[in-house]
Each structure stands twice: as structure tokens, then as C-alpha cells.
Image (tube, rainbow, N blue to C red; front, top):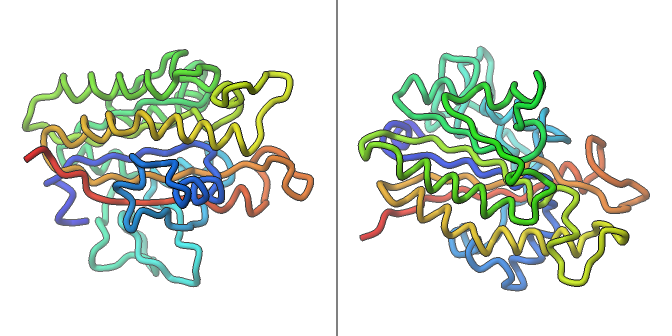
Length: 268
């Protein structure tokens, strides 16, 4: 990552609330053609989330603690704050002196931009301003929220505008928190109703919706130069698993998340 940082643009796309099992099933069934075209081997890596709800998980990720491979470690990290005794800082780790990765990238000349989704990014109150406050520039509109059936399209359009407005030589770190997977997501499945609510089927339909539009985001982020992209979930959610519903709880459906990182190459 010491070669990547300063050379390439960077994208962190969190698919908020996405379960690993649903993501893996859809990838295996060929129902995520745009995502699997970039995922190594066309499959998601199984990882453990650093938190069990949005706020906790993103605080950890912004400090360099991305989801951890779901196997015995230690596992070297891509990014890490300098910390005495760290067992996951390796030769290839980008080590920074600031408390968070976002400000470290800004210090290296990156324009840092947040495109928010769920309520922790809406800037409608003190708590909703903490995570966007890490960034030099942040955007949130009601059209980006969990209540919007076209949230991801609106977020991608904002990303395209952000890229278009930047000088060519300006490096970019873009963070986008996709809200489409978070409840309510019933409106992504044809024939589903508000009364019936959300389930794994509507969750899957929401992921297919994201996949239909993610190619535009990837194209924008690689339009100027090569981009290093990280696509992952911040936590999963339970739909009646062992009697549990929702997240901010310690069930495997919440802790286990899909992850992938890869390069997006610019047009020839």
C-alpha cells in the first residue's frame, strides 16, 4: 500500500448491513455480474466485521481496522496508525501518524470525500456529523437515505459529479456508504409489500439493485487513473436467525461480512 498511496485514487464502498451468506449465494448464482467481474476469483472473501453496527464499524475502519479474514491470524493490514506493539502492521502496510486514515490521506494530498447513506452520515444532529466530519467534503441528501428506493443511483450520480469537478492531477479518496441493503429494503423486490416487511429475499434484491448500478461508480473512479477499490460490508443483519432480528448484537449473521479489494484500471 505504500506504492498505491500517492499514486492511485482510492475507493472505499461499504455496502451497509450486507450479510455474507446472501452476498456469497448471489455471486455463486451469477446474479452479481458487475461486482463479480472485479472480485478476485469472482467470489467474496469471508471476513469478520470490526463492529456490529454502522457507527462502531466505521469508526474502526477509518482507523485502519478493515474487516478481518475469517481464519486464525494474525492478518497483516493494508492501513494502520503507528501503534507500539501492533502485530498486524507489516512491510506492505501504509502506516500513518494521524489518528485516522482519512486525515492521513488528506496530508498526502488526497481530496477526501464522503457520500453518506444511513442516518449516521446525515449530518442532522451532532451524532450524524461525526463520521462525515472526518472528510474535507461530505454529501448527504434524503435521496441517499434508507427510505429511498433509488438511493444508490442518486449516490452514484453524486460520485460522478465529484469526479468530474476535480482537476485531473488531484488524487481522490472517495468513501461511499450504500444504504440500499439496510432496512427497509422490501421495495427492491417486485411484489413485496410494506406490510410483509424485509427478509433475506428482499435483502438479496437490494444487492442486485446495487450491482446494476455499481459499474457507473467503478467507471467514474477509474476514469482519470488507476483506482484501488475496497468493497465490503460493515456488518450483517439477522432476519429471525435463531430468534434474532436486526443488528447491534453478537450473532454470526451480523459479525460475518463479505469483502473484496481490487484495482480498477483506467480506459486504454
